[in-house]
View 1: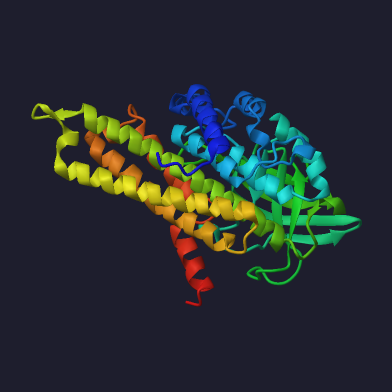
View 2: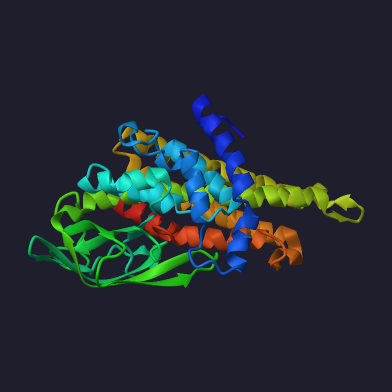
Length: 375
């Protein structure tokens, strides 16, 4: 693997690689699926993530975290993807941490996240394909707000301790501005979460908020100006999802290269066939380019660069394409057995499909980049 990382980041990668492979391999996912686990992930494993310090990577040292950056968070996410480890790391320790940053709610929820006791979820999407539309309404009520509406594709929304909810406080449903973000506790009256099993066996929820009341201090950022906070959380979530996608693609590719070396036809390994060598080399090249795009986005986020937003969309689009190629080639090169549940390669295709949709797919981000360039 090319040396993209510095010495400290490389040490973190090696630690995460060993830990995740040992405690949350694909067999862990298979067990949760076969037992129809209602949470979709292990709370005990989440605590172990905390003991390793992973849950506090993006939380400042003054608040009990490690005070590291998106590059380091991505190192952990790539290993989560490589092993298909069901975990709230992306939604909680990355996206939600960024949404809570700088608010009064951070002091309430950060300690639980650092300790591996708190799970957070982002309630943003209301329709298909991550459309930029917010119809859920928040109206002033007494000293706070009353929220009414619905959300979908809320990963871990049925078990989250806190929900980061994007609501409309002014304007029309399709307006980019006049959005406010709220931290809504799980036990809020009027909040209903209906869990649904996704293609990769993870669980997301459909949320219904019927007159859910929250205090004014539940607001993240400023009233009517929540787009800034939302965009910050989305940049983190999209970059994190891209890093996890790289891990999924790399894991599938490694499994397939191993199969090409072992499987024999006509008395020789099929990896000796030139056509398959060309396909494998092409796949490796695409995955390395995608990994470089993700690292660039992470570095720009950590630097607070104005160019980060564009780089994030490039990374999410490219990893969607590269990982889709990886999982499709993997199933094909495994032949008929690649379609069976006995082999793990099919799990990679399913996880790639869900991650590709999360926070906007390749087409969404290609369109976003085109519009930003004036097309």
